[in-house]
Amino acid sequence: MINIGILSAAKSPIYEFLRSYLLSAQRFDIILTALTSKSDFNSVDLFILEKTIPNLSVLLTGNNCRTLVIDNDNSCIIPSLASLELCVITCGLAQKATVTASSVKENNFTYCLQRSIFDLKGQEIFPQEFGVSCKKKITSLSSCLLGITALFICGESGKNLQEFMF
Image (tube, rainbow, N blue to C red):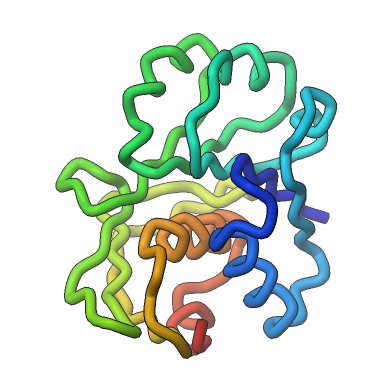
């Protein structure tokens, strides 16, 4: 069982994005946890940070999680996490982000993994690009990038993600 911890508002776009995919793909081996207290942080395998919070390094200290997926707009917190030996994956439209998007349109875009990352089993995921289609107008590109990256890290294939209509 994989537990994805989401530090965001309840029922946020990222939470709904992931919940929708997991139900449709029947991935019952992955659970979502809205992180609301320090104890919630102890049982997660992967953190998704959609918003910054004070003392994040204190909350992340002492747990087993080694991967943090963040919006590139929050990259200013990375230096404060240096002592935690986390793998930090940034998502956004900046050139230096690990994951970015191109050819963004109203209901589709190209997902671009710009450098290799590792999934939770230690398997390397090589740089790649693929098209992503959405049923509705994209209201939060950031949530899409964070969600797809989290699913990649949990072992979902790019082929499956490309074929799914979000």
